[in-house]
Image (cartoon, rainbow, N blue to C red):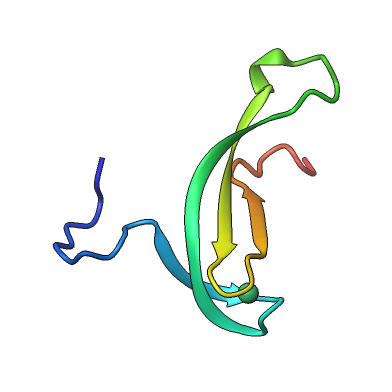
Length: 74
Ligand SMILES: [Zn+2]
């Protein structure tokens, strides 16, 4: 499913974000991945959670952010 109808040749999964390693805004390759959590055995339905993975095109630093941030504190 495409959300942006750009007809340019650039890839849709690139995004400009701030990179802590570079200390500036760089282009990142962004993808959504399901990361398995095999730590606690219980709650098997939460075994895989979507993560947003961004790789800096300059230094290669990978930054992973969990998308569902609901069960952290409350
Ligand atoms: Zn970087």
